[in-house]
Image (cartoon, rainbow, N blue to C red; front, side, top):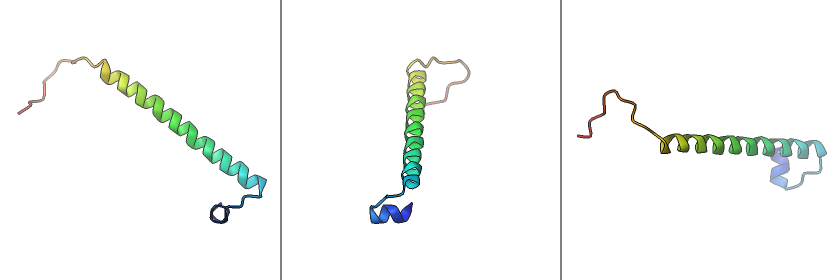
Length: 58
């Protein structure tokens, strides 16, 4: 894969398929991370104090 990247020539269909697959995996990871970020942001935006000792601000 590195040689094909360096030369800029990808004539092998298997190599192209591998690259497409990896690109798809990366896209899925990005989507998963964006969903996680949205979930965490929503959790923080609706945060309610849960009792217990509060940390001092001094």
